Length: 238
Image 1 (cartoon, helix red, strand yellow):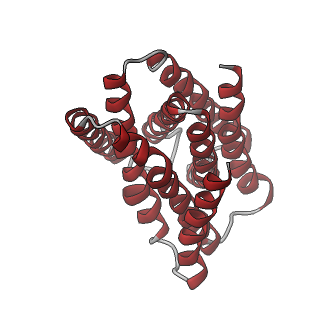
Image 2 (cartoon, helix red, strand yellow; image 1 turned 90 degrees about the vertical axis):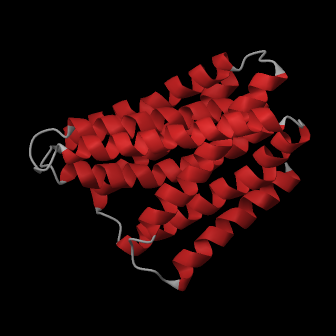
Image 3 (cartoon, one colour; image 1 turned 180 degrees about the vertical axis):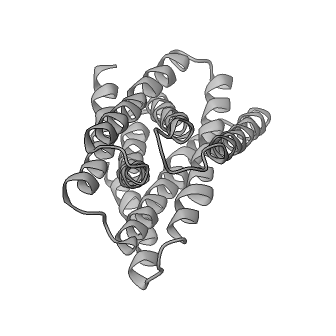
């Protein structure tokens, strides 16, 4: 457990670093943010296709794959719908954006749970997935700080909020590890399939959608393939 929590600290730190860059230096350009989002999408997709998917296939339990994958898709659609509903109630850029923060917190808690799933599948899978989500949460830290600053919050309030949100990664990781501790194969297959759906949703419906809202350049597009290739090679050498 100590090793797992130590690894989970990296995405926590990355989230805080992302916010610190915005608060202490300057807001990164849209091109830089798009590059990071493409890079994170490529890395996450690489872990899914190279590590998680083969592990799921070799268990040969299609019924549980369908069950876990279906629940994962429904859960992610519900979270996305919840986020839109909460944010729709906050149409004024004033005060503390409780709804927006709540939606992000749920998303970050799920990221931590996915790290726990990765380590339950194996140390290598957990470490690679942690690396992928560290890049994703660095980008998220930038986005959260920019969004909160638009509400007129002080730098101290923004930093405390980001730190509180990022700490949920550790909670989610612990929950994931305990849920899957000594889990039977059918439960592992179901939860791994849930994680597969959640990560694919993260790539297609969050990272890439947000990345395409930024100016497109050959470098930002290439970042996706760079991220994929990098984790592919690291996974082969690990």
